[in-house]
Length: 256
Image 1 (cartoon, one colour):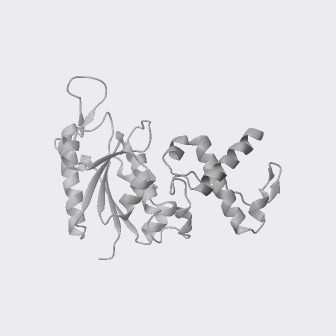
Image 2: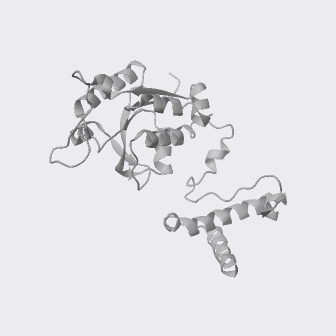
Image 3: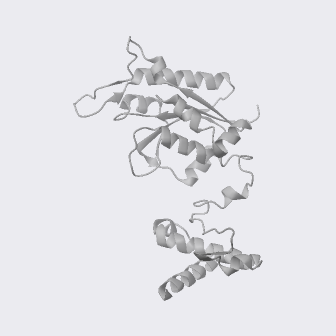
């Protein structure tokens, strides 16, 4: 079968995930058949009259914990559906504040793999640890902060993955020049008018000198990363040209 990215999401708010994924680049790519989305509500797999999906944590404390049984049944249904559709390999990812930081490198790795994914969007205080230990392949965090549920982080991961799929962007070069792709933040961008009340576009960008434009953009990317994300710069081995451009940028900042 022609390779298509398939993502299944386990969520208590399936309409939220399905609706949001129909906009922008993910929406257009979904319409083109570049990826598939299937949502599964653990409440549909809960037992009892009230179809509970959570309970109080052992040991006490605030909040509720998602039950293992409904999640296990929902995951089994999602994986069975993936196999029936011809997807032999599947990985289960849990969007969690306790997970490893989600980076561009990890997103690119996930998007390029010939696999289907099940994303677990947790709620409440978290998920029964026994489910995570048995079924989850990786825990991923979108930042050092906490949100009310895993739906928004799951949508962020989906968007980041889909934009890397061949044919998802009208101009594939856009993804190649994004922040983090080469370990640097993106350079500043300008559009019309050339001059307005806030100032003028840097002259080099309207010079038509492509070599000078490339050099300016690289210098700005290096400088912006140095100012805003020095941790990224510390991980990068600079070329001779990059080192010279960064030194030039730093001198310019000292003169301001």
